[in-house]
Length: 363
Image 1 (spheres, rainbow, N blue to C red):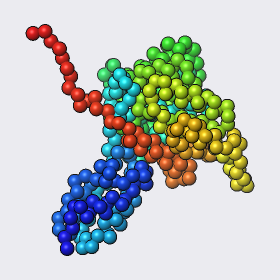
Image 2 (cartoon, rainbow, N blue to C red; image 1 turned 90 degrees about the vertical axis):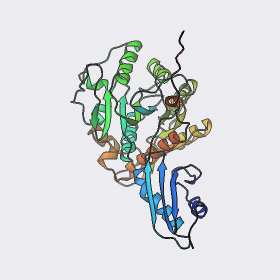
Image 3 (cartoon, helix red, strand yellow; image 1 turned 180 degrees about the horizontal axis):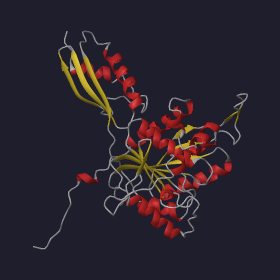
Image 4 (tube, rainbow, N blue to C red; image 1 turned 60 degrees about the vertical axis):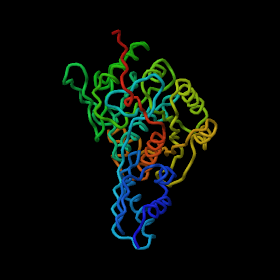
């Protein structure tokens, strides 16, 4: 008995994408379905980078089709395609960048820069083209974390700077342009102007995501960036203690006021595991990040332990995702990255490039 497209489609509806919680048919991920006698072929295009998920998803689809009687050859191609999504009203997209993710915190010392670096590397590991901008003019840390603090950017056209590359991601920071011991004794407007130049005068090359490691706080630089930079969404980094959560709430409110959606919250230093005896202790409290999410109706992306390995690897210029890619902590970062990418994929697409230019002339 030959198969019909209706039978095949019904079987595929039973397959739930483990990353979105939705079936692949209703989300229009199944493309070019062809049924020829007993043979079936189709493509699955995910809207988020998920190289590690392609084979498991293919296996789930094959298992669902295997229940159909008389099934012949099955050809399933799974791929990912990241497109630009909507940003704040009236703000234009940045050339060469499809989506911008702001990683922010209300205060310093909560591991925001380490999270930003590992998030960027995790997105890259899943197959995305990724860049990271170190937006902390006063205390840049990405050059050290990525192990390229001794390098300097070049300009090929005399107008823009070429981003440096580390572990397959593009990066730019004020730390590449000044001596490591030179303090940036600048007032807010000067720092903001320098940051705008780093962002807009860097020749970003076909990025799916640009991760911006925001400076701590909610001051002049943060507000200017939030209002003038086309941010697709923000990730808030906090620790469980009440003081950090107070400041994280201010960060959430700042993004809400300028129309930037919150993609979720990452809770750093959630639990300490003794390296000698394995005893687990919630040094900074427990459940703070989840409560913050519950209060504001936003997603909890994940919790990371207070672990010596994370600090050592960042200080040594090889963050955890590249230093120990198959380890437990790298797995947490990758899960967080997939959640961020999925939440962006579920947002409205940016359609401004579809509209024609309208020119009014006197004739």
